[in-house]
Length: 153
Image 1 (cartoon, rainbow, N blue to C red):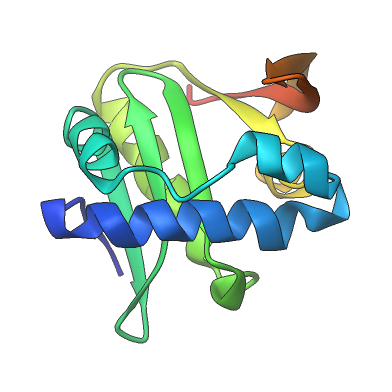
Image 2: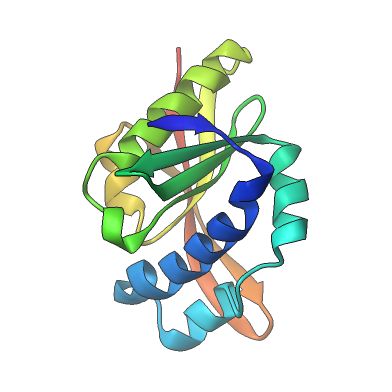
């Protein structure tokens, strides 16, 4: 089930983000890179304020928060994270479908995102193309990521 964000979701989603970075991204990113990406669980109040100001969708599976996505209207998918225990069960696909629906409703002709190397196969399988490769710096650590885009027309 995909639903809208509620203020009470802020703390669980902040934890989910942090845990996912450290567990799921371990195949493509070193421990130092993951620590730079998410050094600690983000502040729940700050995340709640951020998420309330965007289109934030939350996926539940079996009564548990399984993942979330953030859309900056009209066309920027800013975050898409799925808890490690809910990987490969359609959670990310359901969230992406809901985001695409919202983006189209906002008049977007394409959807763009900055994706981790870990997410490359997921986005490629759903029609996204790599637009650019980027390196971002967090502290003194360089992290590789991809800019991906998909036509919504």
